Image 1 (tube, helix red, strand yellow):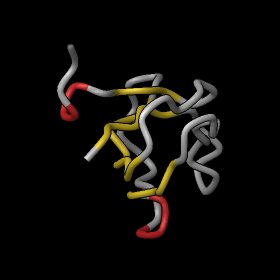
Image 2: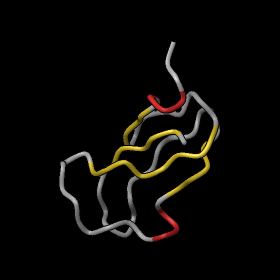
Image 3: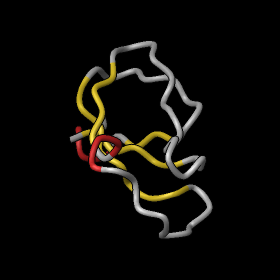
Length: 65
């Protein structure tokens, strides 16, 4: 069974664990531009689709916190 710290999803995937998720890097491995303060942590409900970082127009990884 997964622990909460191991739940990691990327842009476009569906949320299966409700909670708050933190930005955990871009899917392409780049490090810039940094997400805005409002984009670093997001609330997600079951069934929601993980968003991209809109300010950068890039897909990213999200980690359950």
